[in-house]
Amino acid sequence: METVLDYCLSYCCLCCSCYAPRTHDDDLYEPLLLDEERAAVNELLNYLNREYEEKPSLSEDRLRAINILTYSHNDDLQRSAALCLAEISERLIQPINSKVLEPLLALMESRDIETQKAASLALSNLALHGHDTNKDVIMRSGALQLLIKLLRCSNEEIQCNVCGCITTLATTDANKKEIVSCGGVPPLISLARSTDTRVKRNATGALLNLTHIDSTRTVLVSHGAVPLFVNSLHSEDPEIQYYCAAALSNLAVDATHRASVVQAGNSKVLRQLIRLLESPSEKVKCQACFALRNLASDEDNQVNIVEMGALPPLHHIMETCTKDTVAAAVAALRNLSIHRRNEMPIVKESFLVELGNQLREPMSWDAHCHAAGTIRNLAAGDQLRTIIEKGTLDSLIIAFMRSTSPLAVQSELTAALAVLSADEQAKAILVNAQEGKVFSKLISLAANSHHSDVQYNSAGTIGQLVLQDLKPELITANILGLLRYIERFARHPDPSFIHIGLWTSLQLLKDATFRTAFGESAIPRLLEGMQQRPSMPLQIQQLAQTVLDNMG
Image (tube, rainbow, N blue to C red):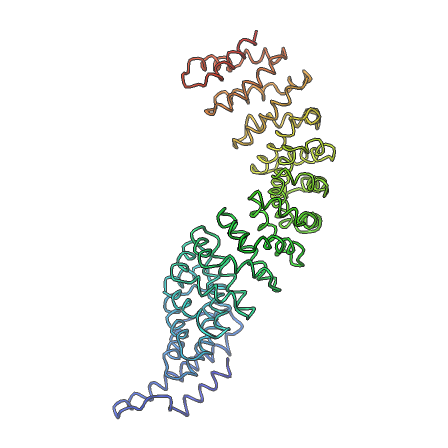
């Protein structure tokens, strides 16, 4: 950079052949113009010599110097301005404004390729490495139209810089929509087919960012992005594999686009994603898991993915990879476990033991959610007894008893327990687990949780457990919690909540101590009031009367 400026300083002093012929009057101003250019070069040289190691800034004097060089008729001076901006942009922390962008955008339209290279790199750096507000300033400046225009230039370095800049800009929904509406999709798709790996990588990254909202996904599909992503999964570049797997995962959120993904690859896309589960790149594995998970929202894909051999690499990921990738693998397994035909292959692959191991890992909340969901799916099929025999229920209990579990995890864990509690052996395990503490926590969640699913799932499990011959001391120890839960459910606007609370009450009234406490509570008056409410379903009114009849 300094060499270029030194050259320009000498050039400005010794040669003026770059200027158009001037009249006699114009000659009066020629020394002033040359002095300004010389001063501008000196200003930037001083910056490089004295302040390069400091945090760069664009002072008024420095910006004026850049403007002088930018609007010079000398290509070398323009190039120097662009190179200086590219260098400053790498470390510039201060927010930019329109005064900074004006010369930069002018340089990006230069007839000189080297100037365009440096200027496009500077803009990309300002968007990627600069202040958070830079992206908004760039979008308001009208730079997007110029960026999209430059996507069609023939220089690969400029293509790479511009794609990188658009990728960074495409991080808000508003910007994504603007990129699409300005016609950015067709040239990006064209560059994503480039033979230059850097260009292909950056263009694919920009397209990936456009797949995050539904409206832009539809436009991408209509312009042929699906076959592009499917074919590019075969790239040898891990970054491109990652971008394409992530893009296909995002597209597969929508049922129509899921069908397009599978049709575009003639089902081979499933095989390629399964192959990527064994990639040496952790993040490629992770995105392949997510893509398979979303594609496995369709019944046919659930069977095909298992038949094509996805289970062994998924199991290996669960045993060997980092927390986030493991969670992605368990999420894929969860969707695969929905189909009854996949139950036995999953059990034979020893996933139950590994799911139990994941549930015992503290703080792995995403894995806990999906592991519990998988167990629930398998228990709803024919694998309930196997789950108990493999000790997976014990692991589920350990995860359930963690007091720090987020509500979303509690919801999944209680849902799994509700399904498992239909089994007599599971009932006995749950009632006696941790000296009755599991039973007590279920009551506490039903009575106090702010999450309706957690409440309902816990109450459903309690409803199964009270079918056991509960020890009187267990009921006595939990009477206050039971009454609080039943009263809360009796006041609930949802009839299904009222029903399960009444049904549980009916079972518990067999215990004399509970019966006495129940009669002294406010619940009987609530039940009597149900008889007077025309809006209350008849089945609920009849059950409420049955509970009242059994109080004596």
